[in-house]
Length: 211
Ligand SMILES: N[C@@H](CCC(=O)N[C@@H](CS)C(=O)NCC(=O)O)C(=O)O
Image (tube, rainbow, N blue to C red):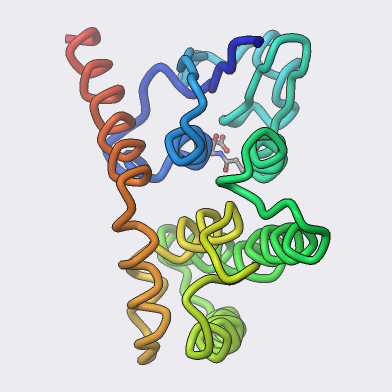
């Protein structure tokens, strides 16, 4: 079996630590019991080699033998195809998993990332907040009716949706008890805790190397 390698930055400032998206891939590997290594590209000096593997100069990207892929969502689907722990194998369960994985990216993160960008750049936008509220409201209606998004069990779709929703500031406006319980439940999993702790340790070790 080829070696799975998750690529991330060699260092990032304090702010994004715990949220760099290599965490999604680490978490998926932890859930599935897939062995993986973590390697790095420079954060501060992103060269041609990095852009050849991630055309936006971002992380994460994944290598699995001859397979190379960027986009955390694509990486998660790749890993889910390797392990039933991440995606149901019956056609309906698999379809639901893919559907909610794409929904997390394209119906929720598509709104929450611009919202977050306006927030951190100090240029709040009421219309964007209303749009985000509306999307979160619809997710709340779904989560009131079920513990998991797809196939009545944990899947990679929950991993991704919880990772998108765990940004506290985003959830601070509005009362959404089912969403709160969901985020707590999904990020309470050992796989998340391990992935999060490992990412924090990775960047803490990088600080030491810089001093
Ligand atoms: N859609 C991409 C987004 C990747 C992304 O936003 N990566 C961040 C780290 S979590 C990054 O590299 N930011 C630095 C930059 O955009 O220059 C994915 O899901 O992989």
